[in-house]
Image 1 (spheres, rainbow, N blue to C red):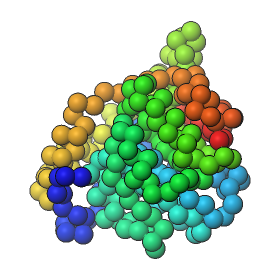
Image 2 (cartoon, rainbow, N blue to C red; image 1 turned 90 degrees about the vertical axis):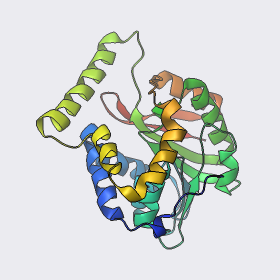
Image 3 (cartoon, rainbow, N blue to C red; image 1 turned 180 degrees about the vertical axis):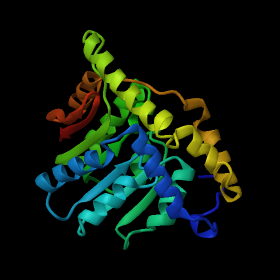
Image 4 (spheres, rainbow, N blue to C red; image 1 turned 90 degrees about the horizontal axis):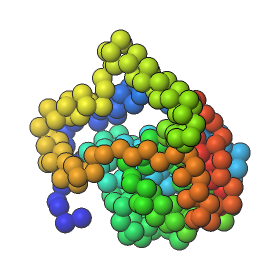
Length: 261
């Protein structure tokens, strides 16, 4: 990157505090977040050997990387994101986890991110609560790239709200109602910190000012959520060369989608 940003090691912050508050904020939106992680890692344990290379795609502060490398001591992971604030928090807490974790700053909307992986192929790519930020054309392109970098027999796991199609209007409404009720319970009743409040708190940290300015420059034009349906994800993955694609866990519209290369 051309912009010179401070490294986490140069900043005197309680990184563990920020990672903990991130996890609590996320759990307000996803009451089954830890269960979702567990199911994803169980799937990896069932289908891959003990030694493997993973990508934590759109990793944020490394929530998947941390859990995966703690569970699988012979695994290696590449954590990829474009958010300088979240990457700094992850690196500040996790560092390299014994040289098994490598952090990569890359924009997933640009095809060049694949080159930054530094591997000809990987065994598994995992992502959660992230790809809904991508417009459909960018999502389709990303899946094409995953079809090239994941080895034959390898896995892709996506945990996110993957919505019902419009013709299932009752199902679609049910998923939205369940999601809305959960968020109201967490943020209005229990007064948990929400996404916006978490970022407002981050903005009060003087040492994160430069990273936050850079983040806003990168993402401000993109702060629009997209809602591609489950069928779009499935079709795009099949078109990208994944031979088996289906849901392996679900709570209303919150799902884990597994694709086998």
